[in-house]
Amino acid sequence: MKKLAIELTVNGRVRQALVPPRMLLSDFIRQELALPGTHVGCEHGVCGACNVLVGGKAVRSCLIFAVQLDGADLKTVEGFGGAEELHPIQQAFWEEHGLQCGFCTPGMLAAASELLAETPDPTDQEIREAISGNLCRCTGYEYIINAIRSAARKLQAQDAQETAEAV
Amino acid sequence: MKPAAFEYHRPNDLQSALALLKEHADASVLAGGQSLVPMMNYRLAQPEHLVDINRIADLDYVREDGAKLAIGALARHNAVKSAPLIAQHLPLIAHAYEWVAHAAVRNRGTLCGNLCHADPASEMPAIMQILDAEMVLTSSDGTRLVPATEFFTGTYETVRVSGEMLTEVRIPKPPADSGWGFEEVSMRKGDFAWAAVACMLRVDNGKIADLRIAAAGVGDSAQRLTGMETTLNGQTPLVQRFEVAAREAAAELDPPETASVSAAYRRDLICALAPRALNAAVSRAT
Ligand SMILES: Cc1cc2nc3c(=O)[nH]c(=O)nc-3n(C[C@H](O)[C@H](O)[C@H](O)COP(=O)(O)OP(=O)(O)OC[C@H]3O[C@@H](n4cnc5c(N)ncnc54)[C@H](O)[C@@H]3O)c2cc1C
Ligand code: FES
Ligand code: FES
Image 1 (cartoon, chains in turn yellow, purple):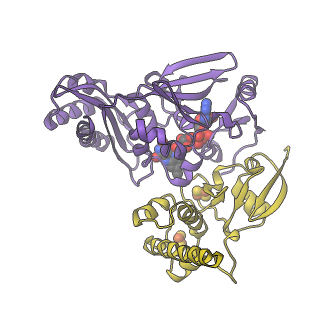
Image 2 (cartoon, chains in turn purple, red):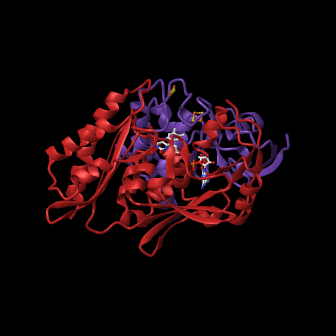
Image 3 (cartoon, helix red, strand yellow):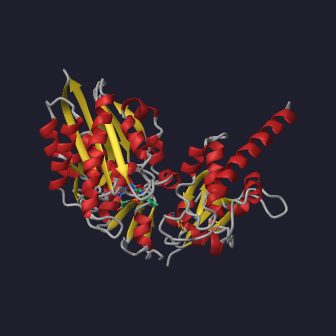
């Protein structure tokens, strides 16, 4: 099958690849980029486990073709932080028991990240709404909601500190 | 669970997109992909050519066009939902969008793609019908305008023919004194409707006027409940009257029987939701 050349930014690094048009972004991320943090649950848009950030917006990577990302800015869970240094949202999930098996977590992080970028101090209703497209089979959601609330506080504190340091 | 191979086209302007659609009879437009790609993953759809319209920036707009609002083929659900012009003139649309899928799906999906997909349980096809929207179908041979009430012909079926693209939806601004209502029940918020009702009306000298009401989830496609419109126009708004009219309308429907919800339950939902939507519309109409 004819492959097409694409160039995109993945977690801050420019990457080039040749992809067959029918390759889903989720498969491209896991198989070609070898970033298995993005999970694939249903492959038809329902579970949200495959959510990634494209240009800062959460999207289903199972419902978009890799070839469509030519020129785009992609962030996967690996772009948040690693075991040595967790991103504040990850840290909050860790502290608040926002995950058990962790299958849904990468998608939850993408949804939470988009929410908190647009709404730094969300209401519980806004948090519930933001993760309404992400299924979790373990936590019962309450701990995830607590984690996102805590993440909002962490990010706000971080922002305040950065502003204070800049002055 | 993987899509079949296809040839990928990514035109940068509308003319090239229309030329590609003309050249390849079995080409599909790829808009948000939020309905098409699941169908391809299941191999329910196996288009040989995909014409990706996501780079045609000219099609991404919600704008005022005299007495109408015009929404372009690349206007995404979330962009329409949060557009100031929609908040000002058509708050019904912003409100109903709360029930359409979830944030990540609305970030990609488009209104025009949603209408072309024509899922019978989809909200916007019902809403376009009560707003007297006009569908602008464009091909390389020209443009035709189709009223929303004539656009939907069945489950996943519209009057659009191969080679045509829905380039724009035009919606007349409703009169300032009109009121609207929208009610839905689905398994979980963001899922397709088990039943949904949308309506728009005015109250003229204490009587209902210009009532338009439509339902989704209860037939082959979203449909106007014209019997209710005839019965209630010119009448004083009374809850009991709404309930009787809703029961009559529900009796005439032929809703689908599915694993999760029976036809009888969908009829019951219409009996409950239509009066609620009408009450809300009456209280908003002043
Ligand atoms: C988990 C999930 C939940 C959802 N819940 C809902 C819901 O509650 N209510 C609801 O209404 N929808 C729901 N959807 C569907 C969603 O709204 C889709 O975005 C929409 O149905 C299709 O729009 P799209 O832009 O993604 O179109 P695509 O998927 O790109 O295309 C859909 C179809 O329309 C054709 N097409 C697209 N654009 C055009 C055009 N401009 N001209 C001609 N043909 C065109 C395509 O060829 C294809 O056949 C849901 C989807 C998912 C994944
Ligand atoms: S794998 Fe993409 S939404 Fe489930
Ligand atoms: S933690 Fe297991 S699915 Fe959410």
